[in-house]
Amino acid sequence: MTAVEAAAIVAMAAAGGIQDATATAMSAPMACQTMPDLPHRYALVYPVSGALADTGSTRTSADGLARLIGPNRARVLRLLDQPRSTTQLAALTGLPPGAVGNHLRVLLDTGAVLRPRAGRDVLYWRTFLGDALVFDCCAP
Image 1 (spheres, rainbow, N blue to C red):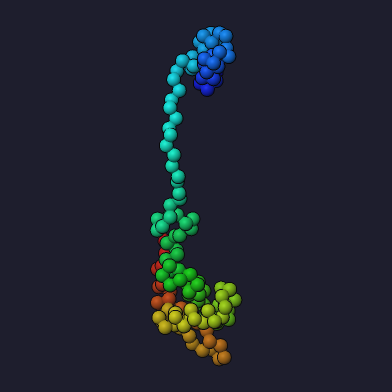
Image 2 (image 1 turned 90 degrees about the horizontal axis):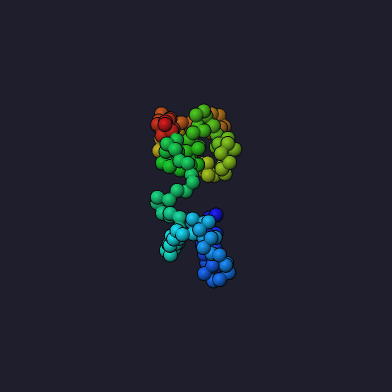
């Protein structure tokens, strides 16, 4: 018999619903124990927000380059391990050619990529600085 059942028997006996409350209460040793008072404190709990909140993303040290220069620009720079045109990069990244051209312009201005012309094509690839950014920022 649980404490709740024993307390119910004692309450019924006090109200006169059970004739032999003593025998029933004695058969339930839990009825003689006092029930602990339930706390009357309530609280509203809100999830953590702000700078220390867990966003669910799993950032690793491999994302250092993306945090430094942006995810799309980092993806373009990583793809330039071999000579590629703006159109090829746009197809590989899924970005519009204009956006790829803007990223390439910034990378060219900083010296991270080269832009030699090969006939009618303009190809881009990483310089030593671009290699250092890719490999040093992505090393675990």
